[in-house]
Amino acid sequence: MAHIDYFMFPISPFNYLAGRGLDDIAAKHGATVTYKPFGLMRIFEKTGGLPPAQRHPSRQAYRLQEIERIAKLNKMPVNLKPAHFPTNPVPAMSAIIAAQDAGGGDLSGLCFTLLRGCWADEQNVADDAVIKAALTANGFDAGLADSGMLSGSEMVERNTNEALERGVFGAPSYLVNDQVFWGQDRLAHLDAYLSEIS
Image (tube, rainbow, N blue to C red):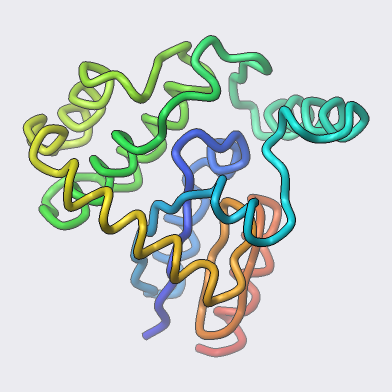
């Protein structure tokens, strides 16, 4: 059985624009998925990337055009300048990690709820109430937002170190064996690769 390591960042617009396409691919191939929230800014620092605000104006402008085009193509609402971006991603990442450990709910739904909260619903996904509402809406105990902070922060650090070791330099990234698929537009490539190895 194939396994996918999903390196995600809960305030990435491209994570949001990937929708829940990974669910369909994993189900199609009977693949398991481990969600690995990680520190994207540290990855940028170590691999030569820049946070959006530090990029050349032409790159910043193109990024916004891309977000708008992809959202339109995928029929997804998007706010190109969300009120709460950037925000502290650690509380959301910790909640995702705690929810994965706890099980019993819709982990993909939780991630998408938080991503949509940032990029379409004008929510601050660093806010405790927003995180608890997302947990509850996806079948998890809201208390995970409180209990998972310390262990979640430690796991984010481990995930970030693993991402560096395995060649990850952006989000979303989907890893199968030694193959890295970077970006929401590489889901079709992931699908094809899983077909090859099955």
